[in-house]
Length: 516
Image (cartoon, rainbow, N blue to C red; front, side, top):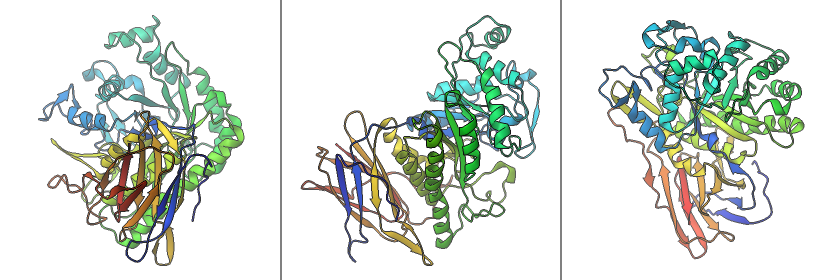
């Protein structure tokens, strides 16, 4: 079993008590001695020009009978504001390296059409461009994260885009922004310098890309009130050499973050990934094994970064993560539309626990993707809209945003299938500015309730409350006919017993507790 490092001071001891009547046994210790903050930006989202993520998702037909501002769908905005999304990454993804920003400004009727060669060969009218995206971010109350075009673009193109958005000068490009309706600078600070430059972003070597990054970064200028956070295109999954070369060749002061992309493929086979809704326990187990690989990836990439950046100035930015299954039958395979089950909620909770527990280095992330694509938070069908189980996880976990990280040490029971084992429980914890402690627990075992008895020596608390997400079956989903089949419920399985906390963690569930 994996053991996480534990600071010696201020320990909250949680004992997973068990017997044949109560389940299995283990321990979870949480330290209150920490100077690390769980950045809210770990809870970021990703919206690419892909399928119905933008068009038919955020940006809808003007005649669709839903509440809108311009063509931005406001019930979606309200749902995302509720979970406090901190940032939104756009326009891609692979699309970013074929997107030319000047095509998406000015009068909509005069914008050139383009073919999205990466995703379905669909013709787009560019009606959703830079101003529309930033209007969306303003409505959401989140920070924009723009991915610049390195693959098919130029240094001048990216430099001028930054000037267009951030400069308060009287240059021609700034005057163009004012002509297009926004005299004041937008002050966009998060900038991705290319996307997946090892693949769809140009099939580059790390040596070539790291030199190219330095060239682009040199001309990505800071303007008043908008100091750029430049994020380099980092490794694919376990390509540790890419991280090594970039960290060695790019000065720490020149980049704020290095991206990492990793998707949970249920079967482990990109050619046949597996169904989003039809899977047995063996495939579920394999999916969770692949999900838990994120712990290994973050740990090993962080260790390489530590060699060149011991002060942790450069963030590891996991700006594409989530489960990727085969598209739903009958849908356009290039649109990557998939349903979202209880299994996906367990993946989301587990992954966010991993990020929280590595928040010294992981300070930004983005779920792929927000609406109608991959592990989406929201699915739509014309005027209909449903919240997925994954959405509810982000709703539960928002309490960790910008809270003090509390290090955990876990010794959990095993969940075993066909002689293979994984830890049944994972967890993370934080303490907010008011002193409330929040503990998030995921039970991956689909059969057994695990009873947790908690001794809290260093935290003064009187009451415990919580929320739980679970359902009868791992394959359960929310549909347009049954939108609330999987939903958050008040958790009544935790109680104060003297100076101890006793929790009955249901099978296949995610629980977040609040102690105050």
